[in-house]
Length: 286
Image (cartoon, rainbow, N blue to C red; front, side, top):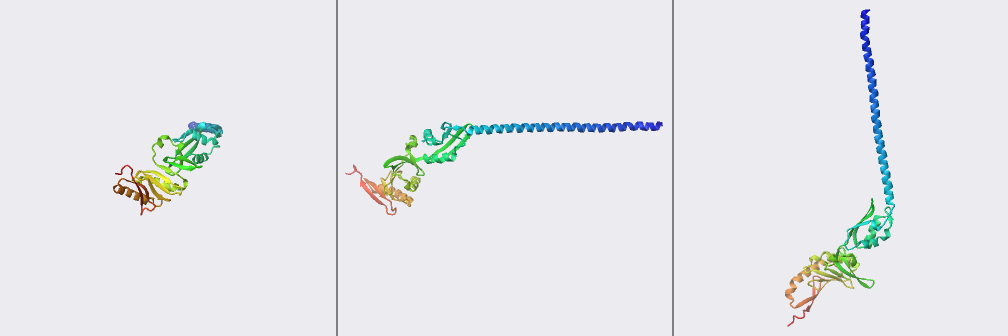
């Protein structure tokens, strides 16, 4: 009996330890689940807060955008860069048909094409800015290269042209640029634009600096250089380079051949057979 009792007494603690171990494991699982649930709840709350924050911010920005976009703006809210001869007032008058309008109604491409059509502008970019509401104009003006005159409404109008032969009204060119330009074109017209461009682009080939391009009523072209009063080219410029080369050759040879004589006209319509018309220089005769 004592042996049996001893065995039983020895066995009971073992059973008790197992139960305690099971209870401990169970408590640990419950504790871990609680921690996990708390952690997930915190993540959920953070994500919910972030969602609410970003949603509120987006709604605020959208409402602000719509509020700004639908507000009418005036020319005073237009920022302009790139102006030289054209003034802010010129831009204001030209774009008056677009103001006041809200930003969503303003079409940048429409403004760009209208400005290029109405003013001597080579290129322009128009951008809308919503915060604060503004219109930004970046303008590239046409660069004048020669004075010009043309017959307009039975009157002679003075202006300038650029390297592309496009007309620039004189009021859109500042005085400082006007003072640096020596070349002029008489009786400019769009029908001779191609020929004018070709002559201007080759003007540095002339050994005698080019001073004037003339177009007569028959649409024939003649030139005035520092050395020659009138160089007849004819109605076209198909042989322009050949004509310029012949003129340069004449300039080298004539001073030694013609004493007290001035070349009045050089006819280079056929550059292979140039014709000269000369006159005596008054005051040098004996």
